[in-house]
Length: 291
Length: 291
Image (cartoon, rainbow over all chains, first blue to last red; front, side):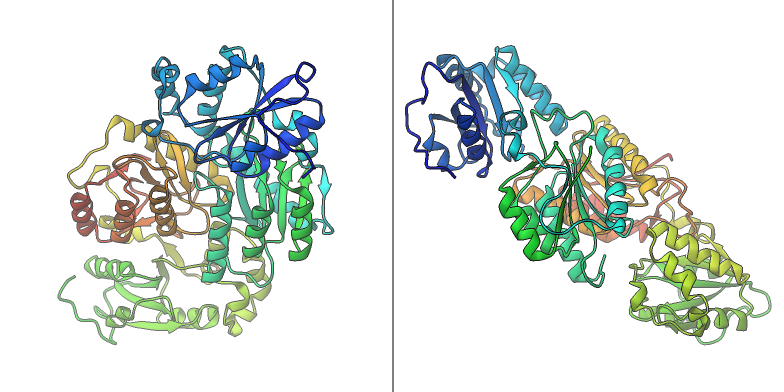
């Protein structure tokens, strides 16, 4: 995005406070790294083999396999890093698939316990293990506030009163589901829940709505329905902030929705300008509701 | 199922009380017709073009298109039928696709209003229109109680304490969703919601879980997870009783679940013996929980 050239050396050594970025999939971790640098921080990227993009190599970085907890803590200690951001999509591994190093084996009982729980509970537990090592976890939204959804429409379309009713219905539904630590998204059209997200993820849910409409279920003439996305109540935004990006907009367009509504201040927007441009071209709204 | 041969003539004329059966898709309406006859009723089947099975022609019957409300009431009046059962799967049509006859056009405003609402609200409204014409709607479970899920396991497998915990989680989740008039089913595994049904239907939800497991999401070694199915709270069982059948068992087997749990007394089981046989063969339990 900028003309920066990363390398093997930390930049601003001595002056910039280091910040570890645990990189999930996609380009988003790199955007956070860019913003962190702009804000005068020295980003150190932690890549997960098979998950993170190769582009993280433009920054000082280390590669880990899932489960290499000891290696993670050693890398942080070596660089005296006291803060970490967790960002980007990461699908939940099976505990049995983790590559446990000695640092993980020491904590295996605790880890195994956590993997029996819901996604949110798992993340909260992992964060507690990290913070016990003296590494404070900060939110991507604190480091890169421009990446968070603003209030109101962005792009040219605004919401109608019918859309507002669907959005309110979706918010209520997600609120009711919160305590089950399930999905963060639903598709609502004409006052009906067309799809509710659980473990499949938002993109798969949107593909399902597209199929249903093509196949005669939930079929309507013309665009109908809104994707509503918001964090679970009480969800720690530092650990798992819902996100949308150009893929979400394309999925919503294929499902012939009227738009995408997200909780302002609580949902990350990957490539905001491109999202707005694609939404405008597809005739969709993107709307940040006050949460 | 029995050696009965249907025909154009009502059987037991003069003695048997007539009973209309509005036939959705599948073999289930015919099972209800068989049971109704055994119970001394004279079934009169109402086929919906493109929905009901051709087999309904073994009974006194009439064929209608969706929206032929006037023709429905005329057929019932002509035969002095005062009771009707609604049974079998029926996917929700678009209001614009209904073939409105004069009896429907007279009620078009009311019908259009109903079609803006959730599935349950739509059914309640349609039932009110039918009962206003002096036709009492009875539940399939009242006519054919042997078709309803019993309490406890049927088939050879029983539930484990882990399964019981997943079932309790699923029941709570469905209860919380009730007021949104959304799905009647969810898949829960290891204390997590893997899939939640909305407009796509139970079979599509099970196919999704099978895909997720094949694709690495919600992946586990060996069978895991339970399909939990129950009516919405306050749902009128005469109008829309959840149902499972051999297709459900096959879908659960493909999703590599541990079993299927249904609300005893409140869920219809199509071809119960075949369900139990297929579940046994696939190593699944089918369990009726007290509701």
